[in-house]
Image 1 (cartoon, rainbow, N blue to C red):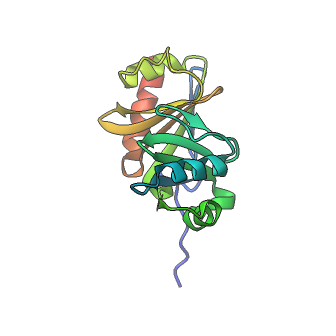
Image 2: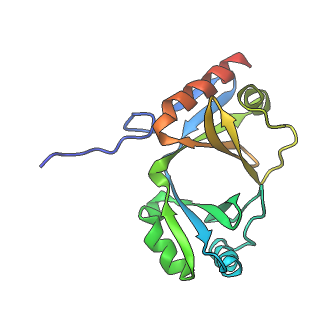
Length: 184
């Protein structure tokens, strides 16, 4: 039998970490992802299920909420759920049991690459990458934007900016962010 070894989105056996001029870009394969969406007519039930799941109100448009599990608003009555990969490697069945309600669950873990950007000058880096007003983005906000021709999800945390991009274009996104980091 062939021994298969999982690779990170950027092609390495271990997550990649790049540091330039006080900025650090870290690949994060340790997060499991799933989309939760309401069935037509089940919007209130879906919102209540997401709230119960994350231990906080389901986030409104442009917001992020939750502690252990986190929900990112991605569309009308739709959220991306983040969970630790160690405990949620097979996230959909775990969420199906936890939610138990009338929702649509879709596995997203292998569809996205997560890159965390930290450092003092993250705003100038982000200003080179997208047309959002990054100086106005509050902690706990999340929105879609275009970075280097890719539709990406950007989340503002207290200590970092989280970038989600298509896994199939992980190297392109990584290159764009590294180039912007070098330009600051």
